[in-house]
Length: 258
Image 1 (cartoon, rainbow, N blue to C red):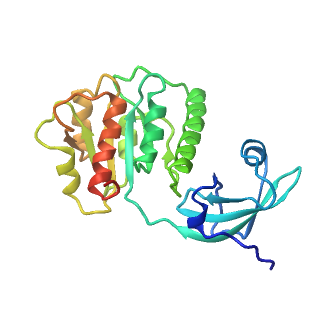
Image 2 (image 1 turned 90 degrees about the vertical axis):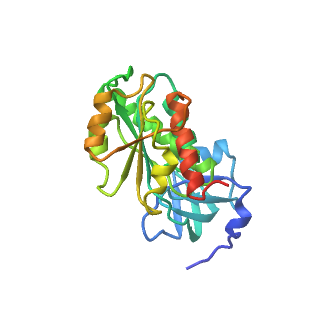
């Protein structure tokens, strides 16, 4: 088999990154067509022998080189895989907000280490998505987290679940998940205290209400599922701010942020 020289991955920090889902084990070559071909040739203007980094969204990154450019596709050679250390599962159950606030949460939440997003319909959610619209939005949201993962140099890509009811999303979590609810009426239990109460590596899910917050009935129903209400402090934060502030606290306590 012909081998191709690849720069060490640490030397590719200044070059472009591209998200390409790959099988296990990864092939030594891959041909990209369609959107990815267009992006490489017409947006990035790469040519034969250009180097880049490919990441597969599942925790692996590869130093890559453009081997050939054709009308039907761009052929890349892949070097050895670099595996990212496993990170804690952090799920964000975000009450559907108005406008483009969710897109902000998805982008910045990916940068801050969230591993899954669950857009949820709560009692006070103003936004209502019909099935076709929900499918279109989920596809757009998935592209947003892919791009955010590329930009912040993550090798994994968070999963974006289709919108569904709040309690349905909560019930879908694994039984060992620490379920925390940001509750503006809670004052006794800080988020950091509840987060530190479980061993490192325990999956965590954070429930964030929409603009109007969660109803007391919703909080009670979540508690019946084992959830614990927590507070971020005395200030009332906007829904898109609350999710990111909570992620920052948890990332700091996990040693992901200085």
